[in-house]
Length: 427
Image (tube, rainbow, N blue to C red; front, side, top):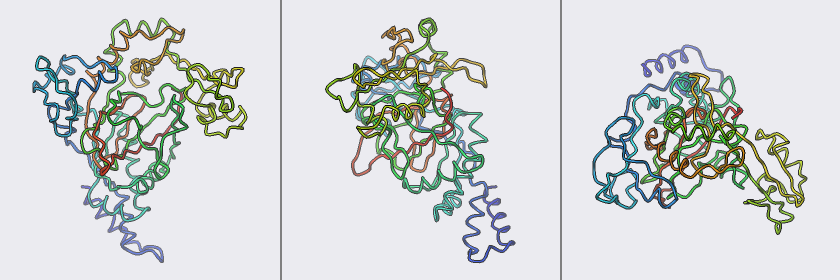
């Protein structure tokens, strides 16, 4: 059908003479790209048996590994771990003791991620010009707007962009398609101003490749989050680096009453960030990891109002900013720890308690045993699959978490994953 639609679109373009100075070929390319070039695909994500999770990925970083209980009622694969084996599934951790079953993370079940595949002809035509890439982005936006509300996760495969510059043109088409999208801005709890960029597009989180990045919702710790986050794979890691996904509602249901009671009874969760004054670096504000000037991208002689404006743009109220006598800045906000899904009415897990770095709103430390429970039980609802070159994964950031498995870093074949965000809204 996609081919027929493209042919009809081209025929229509030929029937109506193009404007003077525009070639018939260029007009046909534009028409074929504007015809819907994406078809639903039932191709499986990942491979049967899933990805092996090596225990030292957890123990090396003080994380709690999943138990060996069945994954959402499905029988786990019973193969013995091989340590160095496992094509595309890590294969670079310590082998599991012979007395233990290897831990595995399965691919998403059918329907968890809606998959579209770009037509080969449409993608090739789009890649010939910036205009074509923007038109392809606009077409992708229309399909994603149709499908994302239902599944919360849409994967578009077979896109032609192999550079950040090319993707920036595609992304321009996505965000400028009516109604135009409002881009989000990344602002972590750490000392950095933002993420490294290529062609004005953020690179994915730059945590070390050997680090297991647990599932999370982007910017859930700020007053202002983003409705959508999307990851584009320019080049995957040669080995490992699978993307993780999990639904917030499922995570909330997996926790014990003790987790829910702690969050509720202590008034939610407290997020606190501390920054020293670059002009008084010898006076280190307690817990500070950097200066507020560096965090906000300001010169050393910038007035405090510059920092206040920066955090206001991130959704912070003036009363959440606290200056000390030495010019240090402490930023605090409290969140209930859960969101209510407007579609289902269910409470969904919405915090970063799994990091073990947050306290309850009243200052009570999050108990280590509950942090361990959150880390462990989440794997029963977490799935893994590898993004390939030309894959674009679009997630409803309010409903679906994302993460990343460790990978081998090969300087001759660097991994390149781009990240975009849109629709800022209250967390």
